[in-house]
Image (cartoon, rainbow, N blue to C red; front, side, top):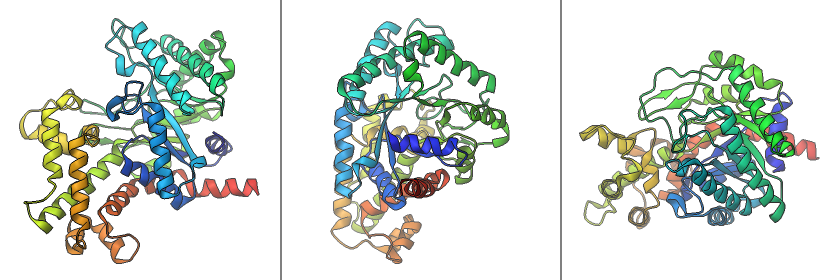
Length: 435
């Protein structure tokens, strides 16, 4: 964890720098993140969410140890140093089981965090902000903190059993909905400094009462609402003036802020967030959204190149799978008719991301890539659908392969985050300190 702690210390020393967290389990997205790390010579923070990866497999079918091995295999494939990988767990708490009573949901959440720590995940977001069956809505800071401390105790005991670096923690009660808001957004209320101070103090007191004061000293960040969010088709942009008081509050504390739902913010806004002490930026749907854009573009290129017969019909396949298995999107896209089609395929909340691991979709994607590999890509068609990537191919800066085009499209997002976080500058400063 020294790489992550160095970044936090660098920020607390007065530098406008940070790190972005890649919250995805798709191999193309993760490869893009690691290639960004190679480009910047910087560490890469990858986090699995509780609904993606848990003791029952989540929607990826992977338990924490499976996900760790999956990431390490990708790192080996592209030559990324595994020592520069930081693995985290995002939204670790009862969210997956919140329809059950709290005692049952927390027991399952405890089993989950135990597996995460056993597998070597050391950045742990303790998220107990959601109400379970029979709970009041919303929960008080005290209840959230008590449940977080319960999970922290399990993490600490597990770490002492397995060894390795000590876990670091992220806390907070004002946690945005994972994957974006479900309702149409208006103006967001930024967390007040008073609320942030109360959350921090309540957690500090509860952890101390539970005998976890030492663990709380390893709390590196707190989740608050800086005024950024997105819904299906709209993004609420960061407004620094509205977060000025909140930003000032954290200067006197040993923590930084962790900003969730930063997807689709401009690079200027991301840079301002880092400057204002939101030194950990979470991004997930924005990455798979870019990947989907590239895959849909390749679907069109393939159809126009070889015709309908023999084409992969990737878009048609994922549309059919989503209609046959609607559980992952139906609670979110309530509009009927054509609007539902637009939401399923193109919404910022990107619920389509749950379906890329489906065997039928994976097979269609493999067929797409194979079809486009059998003959040179028509650069006129690449220029039509992926113009930025076409320019890079023409300038010999990018291979003319389907996989490379998708990865570069995703890296349009990671490059913005890397520049906003000053990743290359941080690594240069770290090397100077070591020397």
